[in-house]
Image (cartoon, rainbow, N blue to C red; front, side):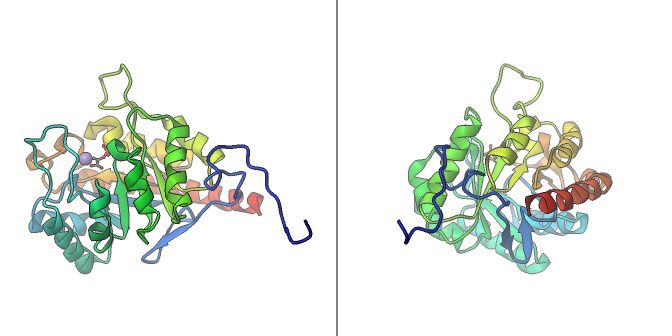
Length: 290
Ligand code: PEP
Ligand code: MN
């Protein structure tokens, strides 16, 4: 028809998030920091927001190391109902305090569609945990939340299912989705999960959305986190989300996989030359894309 400008055939079932739909990478800018662009973005902080001192200290430490976002759960998805469930709104207020003190953006989990408005009123990026990747009511609500979404891969989900979940958010009105590989369940027990590192390269072929790596949940062991983080840079992830606690031995959740302040600073310094190579690669890639 003369009134139709282009017609694009998209064979993938995930239409909006497919590379066939959009060839150039989606860039998501939050508080002046662009994810999916020419910067390798690190998000870091404790598993859970525990108290004011812990989160303010964490924020200072990760900002000093070069992170651009502070992570920390105020709503925690715990396997046991008897474990710490998070400080909820009180935790969100503490994250806001940490943002004001450091200028870091805030990324924090939302577990229920009921809480989306509340969490969106404090957070810069809404994290959807592995256990909620296919909570379709939540995904639909995120379409209208007005904030970028960090969607973590479900622990038994395929790459295609991850993309279909991202499609829910985009199809419901929110194009700002960041994907996260955080390890999947396999027969292996040496690590908490098995990092599907190749999924990052595969996702970069299949989708234009930014993809980051969580080396903390992917391994469950702090000694393995820096090596896996390096692999994430090398394979072309757009960034990392890493657990760091000022005193991991006292952490209420995920202490075993949390770096301490010295280890975090060392990891960031050690990553620098790899990030320089990553940047050179990005320049070449975007030139080819144009
Ligand atoms: C977390 O980031 O602390 C978390 C609970 O992660 P995941 O949903 O990947 O298990
Ligand atoms: Mn955790």
